[in-house]
Structure formats: structure tokens, C-alpha cells
Image 1 (cartoon, rainbow, N blue to C red):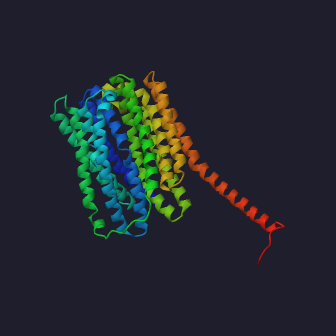
Image 2: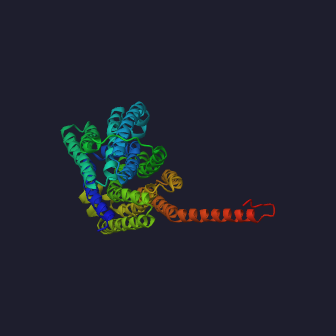
Image 3: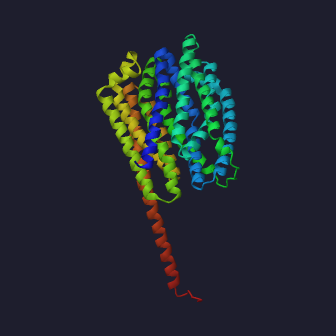
Length: 440
């Protein structure tokens, strides 16, 4: 089995465990809470996705440079990268937490809730930016088993803590129990990560000369836009629809996004392998890796589509229960949207892993976000129309990213060749000019 395929299967397995734990959390909350309260919880979770936008960017940057220093066999640089990143992310998370805490009164109207509920949601920021540093190092070192275990522990603990707190609290305070389970589980995962890299900290720190700022900024913007794309629909549904209808849409979104997050495991396995091949200038191998991951994703989503098309009601009953049966007709449309979005996201990861086409990728994603928001604001007569707009945007995004990945590099190569040819002709004309004297 090819290394990237083995890594992908490892992360798919652990991502599935983490995703199952994560979605058992939301499924159990859907069953244990009233639909209106669950709608509020899921909308706040969507808000925390947006607030924790830097997470994927942080682990991507750390992964790429950990891979680089690992290829160089320089653990001292990895130690320095870890220390500097943890310090910087702790400062950033603290500042953002305080600032957003001050701004929560402005958000209470949007979510139709109170200050204390949003304040409880913001506690997730305490570890949201520092924990991805360890995830990125695991990924960059190719320790996918350890990465999967850490993610799984965080997900399973959140599930257990949330259920215990929700069962022990009255219905008025259940949402607080669900919200604070996240920072508690992340704190445990952080301590485990810190302990597991004790062998890295034994190496003397070596100063890093690489400028991480440009790549980090591009990564934050890219993953920020991706996060907005899979979060803003839930927030707008909460705003435009009744609490019950918004809760039903949250159920559709929940089922399909579970597959999206499991699929992210394949992309994370791809990144260090791509970065290593790119550092060694093995372009053909990079394209082979993309094809292998594309095939895995294709098989996964084809199986999901068949199940959602022929057994939608059984799936809804199994996952959400009978009170959400009205979402069944929309599942086949939502899985189509999620398939195209996942493949578009794969191409985003591919370009970012190779540090190519960053500017045009940002432009494409930004256009897709504005288009999604605009279409959802204009067309929200019913859930079917709402889902159709998301499907259209995701298909267009995939086509655009395919053009960026396949055509853009070829166009750039042709342009470079053209410029070299023109420069060569100019030099020839210069030497052939009557006024030119060859001093040699």
C-alpha cells in the first residue's frame, strides 16, 4: 500500500472516531434538548467555527515547516517552532477572548439569547489556538496514529462531559453544560500533547530563519473563507427561519457535514506527504498523491450518496430520531453539495500544501462566500430553495478550483516560456544591431 494511502486510511479511521464522538455529542444534544434550544446550540457552534478560523491555518503552517525541519533532521528547529508558536497563540487567544467578551452584547440580538450563554461559548477560545500547534507537529512528523488518538480523546471527553452535565442540570441551564464541555476536553488534550513531545523539548533550540508570516497569513485567510462557507448557512437559517425550521435545517447540515469532517482526514494525511515531495521537487509524485486521495474521496461520497438516496428516512431515524423525519427529502441534495464542497476543499489543501496559487485561491473562495451569502439572503422562501442555493455555490466553487489547479499552472508556465523567448529575441536583436560592437 502506498504511504499516503496508508496515512489517509489511518486518519480516516481516527477522524471517523473523532467525528462519531463529535456528532454523537450534537445528536445526543438534539435528542436531549428541545428543538428550539438545540437550534440555538447549533447556531452558537457555527459561531465558534468562525471564531476558531485560525485553527486549521495554524496546524497547516506548523505541519509544513515541521515537515521541512524533519526532512532536514533538525529537531532543534522543531523545538523552537513549537515554543514560539505556543507562546504566540496563547497571547493571541487571550486577546481575542477578552475582545469578544466585550462585544457579546452586540451578538445577543442575532442569536436571540443572553450574554452569559455567549460568554460560555467563548471559553472554547482558551485552548482553540494553542492545541492546533501540537496537531500540526504530529501531522508534520507523520505521527498520524498519535494525532488521531489526541483528536479522539478530545472528542470522546466532550461527549461524556456534555451528557453528564446536561443530565444533571435543569432544562434552563442545559445549554451551559453543553458549551463548557468543549474547553474542558481541549484542556485535557493539550496536556497530553505537551507531555507526548517531551522528547522534542530535550533538543537544544535552533533559531529559525524562515519567514512564516506570509504563508501563515495566506493560510488564515484561506481557511477562514472555507470555515465561513460551511458555517454561514446555519447562522442565516437561524436568522431567516423559525426556530423549529432552523433546527430542522441544522439536522440536515449536521448529517452531511459529518462526512465532510471525516473527509478532512484524507487531506491532512496528504499535506505532509505533498510538502515533503515538494521540498524534494518531485512534481509527478505530487500529482499521483492528489489522484489517490481523490479516488478515496470519490468512493466515500459515492457510497454516502447511494445510502442517502435510497434510505434517507432510515438514516434520519437512526441519527436524529423521528422528530426530524421531515429533513429526509433534502438529504440527497445536501450530500451533492457536500461532495462538490469536499472536492473543492481538497484542491484548496493541494494548492496550499505546495505553496502555490494562494492569491487566486483566496479570490475564488472570497467570491464564493459573497455569492453564498447573497443567494441565501435573496432566496430563502423555503428549505428546498435554501439547500438548492448552497448546492449551486458548491458546484461553482469546485469548477473554479479545478480551473485554478489545472489551468493556472499551465498558463503560468506558458507565460514564463513566452517571456524567456521574448528576452532571447531581444538579446539576439541587440547583438545583430549595426551599432553594437563586440569588445571581445
